[in-house]
Image (cartoon, rainbow, N blue to C red; front, side, top):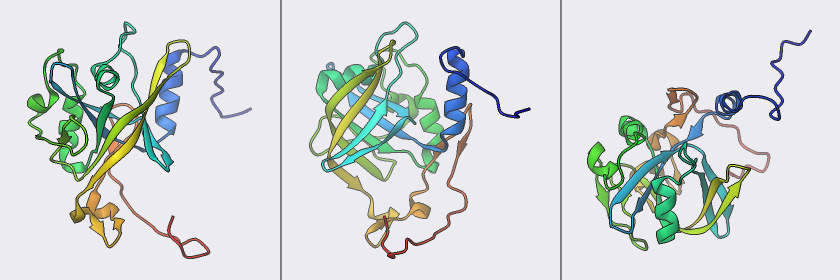
Length: 207
């Protein structure tokens, strides 16, 4: 008899599928997407469904779930309206502010003001970046892919400018111990990197 829990996504409950996915794909890096509305209100929202998708040109993706009623969240509306966003890498010193910024704030309220974080200007886009973190990617919208019957939005942005605080670098590389990023697990759980270990490739070249 198998000890595996057997799950067929075609018949399983949506919540069970979600639990299995977010409990298996871990830890997921967390970043804040900062945007600005047509009315000039700065918005900030954390996402753990994001990754690098291309290097030439540099592109990242983030998945923005719709609201329960099917409407678009503020971040997605702002990205569509302005064609841009900034992605800010979340680190351990501001993990509580990251969690607080995920609360549902009314349209017209800025998460920057609610969490005490500091908006500072970008170079090529109007959206602000988060002063308290060391890495920011200024992005222009490349496309939005709507996936599945619920039109689940996958946003792809081209990175057109980068800000990397040299304090989190050693030589030419970002030093993970200095960066101290936060990972998303499942439920209400998050993680730091913990033990970091190294093994070189056969050719001795870092990837």
